[in-house]
Length: 289
Image (cartoon, rainbow, N blue to C red; front, side, top):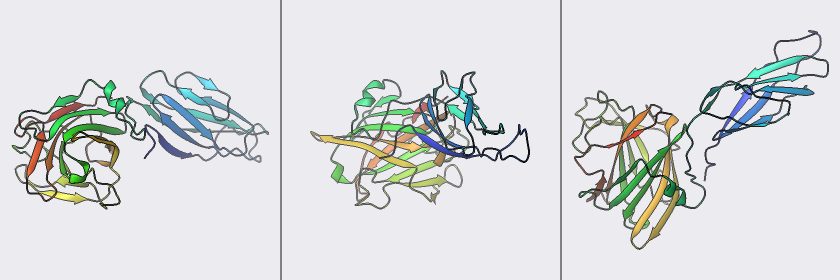
């Protein structure tokens, strides 16, 4: 499983500024950051320095070599490291950190209990739901998370189609009576509950290309836009979770999307259900932060 809510950036800065003597070497400022919610860990691997000063960009500072700092609110921050050598030569390096909404969903905890805390962005299946029972959604600055309850077994190899209006713009994407209320730019398709050992590509991604009333989708490369989390099966019901990487799907970094899901038998012979109901408006997920 991938690590939850943790994003690592490598930052390398050339030594600069504040030199007392150009003949004396300045430190080479190098550090990485790990962002976990509002908490940021600064891993300092700068060379040639004997003292450090961190300005976290929110008014707080630290003289620790590799501090951990918790930002009090969402927003964009520019932390700066000032590294000083034993000869008094200082170099600095800055980066940009965006602290955004966090999610309680963890995909590597072998549990679905974290979804019990989410009471918004939920929809129950309607009269045409078929195998579908319930779906929930959540998000953070990097990912959109989904949870589904449906009748069946994991071994059924059900084919899923996710229709996504990734920019919430009715002027672009496919217009279809399958799910109204949106124009669908992205189609994700595959047997997403199958393990990698039995299916090389569990989900494929397609982008709409052509007139809005034409079902024309071009295949896209890459499979790491999607991650399956915990799957639980009991009493004829499957519950599962997953995430979509917002940075790897066209238009998915905006403030809102629309989504609808279709389940079909593994031989494409029978449509098993939709959520929301076929012909109804797709689910609107607002993601303002």
